[in-house]
Image 1 (tube, rainbow, N blue to C red):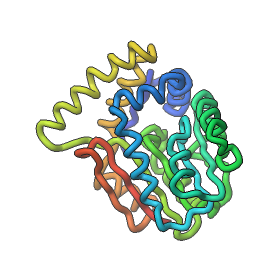
Image 2 (image 1 turned 90 degrees about the vertical axis):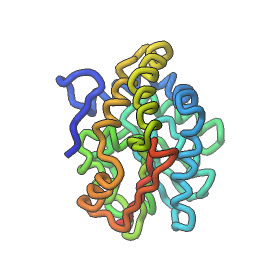
Image 3 (image 1 turned 120 degrees about the horizontal axis):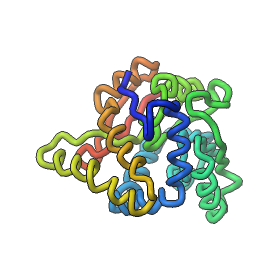
Image 4 (image 1 turned 180 degrees about the vertical axis):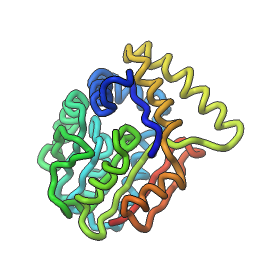
Length: 242
């Protein structure tokens, strides 16, 4: 099991703290994503959804959907019949709902509050399940991954986009310094919650990436698993099938 890292303290559950953290930073979340990644995060999401090109995707679940960026990208690329986005944070979902309405996609995309480790859906419901920068926040990683697999149809595909740890010198050192020192400072000045961005660094460091995460996918029942590193290993796309 990966080391558990919580945003604020050891007292409340990680799930409770993560929900509270995202409720607090929701108004700043999209701006900071674009600003802190220099806009590269949008390219990462596009490439993640491209992993479903050629896969029959009529009904898609986007776990930890946040403000619905990945769900909107899936709608653009895949043109499925239905997308469901689920997230713990209602404040994030409200921003996502506004974005969906502005694009007149409320008949296609449904955003609902819920727990990724106890998905409120029947077995074998979705053709694909996606999650961007969310599995790192699961309280119980194995349970969350098993739930995602449970709701996939046989032959369905999971696409997971998550931060990873660069290993190339000197990029690794520059990246670590940026994430550890500069990013929390920017977070403090903008979102007023430096702990949220300190948690980002700490949770990435503790998260099992690369082959370690592939091993967890295998252990939780996925097959045909792949890891695709992006931008010198800043993040990775993982794919697996039921």
